[in-house]
Length: 273
Image (spheres, rainbow, N blue to C red):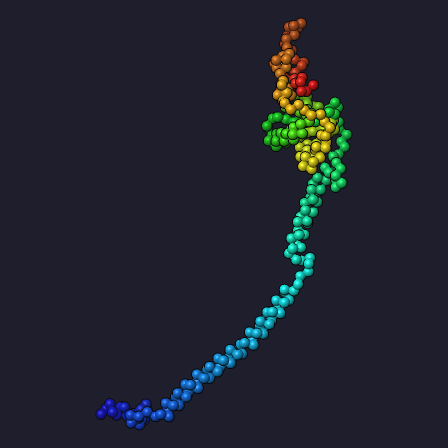
């Protein structure tokens, strides 16, 4: 009985008359409400899609306008091909200008030699190349420069007079007298009796092809080394046997040998005559 009463009472104590039957109009109204709400939602979605289409097309139009501005035809001077073709020439020009600036004291643009016509002369050496150098390895840079210059001129196979100041101090005094200086760097080169310069200038002349022109006309050296000194340019003194002392029979005392240098050596009579 209590269940029946509870079923018959609604919220707030109101009585609901169901009588086991549902109201068809209420069901129909509910279905119409659901269908109408879904249709309204679909209509809104369709309208939003339709409204987005013109906006997207307008945005694409703006993008195309921007692309047309930035993708305007470039001038021929700014094309990549012209730049790739112009860059090597400009590089070559820059390299050429640097070569001229670096070796402007060696060769002019017209191709004539710009080796300074030095007034310094070494008499009696017009038929050879004279190199003042040292064979001591005390200073590596000096030794390397001397060796390089000697090898350069030996490659031309011209008449070469190598004067090692470490083997004979007289060569050092001779060079100081000719140049008029006490502090002289090595090596120093004379070609055909005319003073040329040191290792840096000789290497530059070799690079530009000017050194071959300077030594042109000089007599060639023998293909084989000297049989007496093996191209060392010095031999032991034959009078004192390299001891630098000789016995004076008149005074009966040893004296300094007048023929050899401080090392007991003399110039080779075959290759250094």
